[in-house]
Length: 219
Image 1: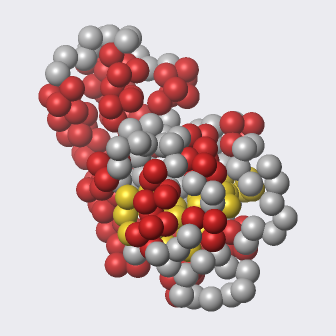
Image 2: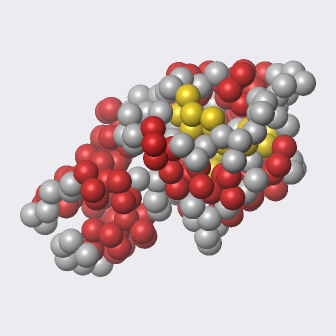
Image 3: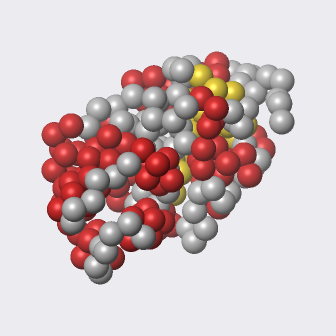
């Protein structure tokens, strides 16, 4: 472990380690399209990084969705079909995760998606055995932008939150990690304008290990 490394690093999953956001958007568009509704850019901005119940509630104000569990089953089927065919990984973040673990820095993942979904992504990335803890939406009661996902990840790693760095790609994720007291790096993935992520301690276009070293804090 380098003296510049944080004592632990917590990664977001969707949009940070894996390019799942387009797959999720397409799955929602598929199922909502069956109901005669076409999601807008405004819808996307309101739901990106949010857990399923929040996104469901948002779209339920636009079009009748029926039973939440039945709707989720249809959505999951569309998502998994696209996941198997279309998933790509972000080699910068996956590469940094591997570097950190090789250097002895423990890592975790804190996500607004289900624990099972995160496990599936990590297995596809070939890093499941490297991740010390996974905190999914079903592992907490207060989701991003609340700090509980990141606080739970730090607890699972046995590292104080203030000694952790977090890697995010959404405004709600940055808010969650910062509220937990972590040095927070936002990676621009093209689905949010840089201004939406300006509350991160650092904003980068491509993640490197050096980005996780706090240096002078701001804010």
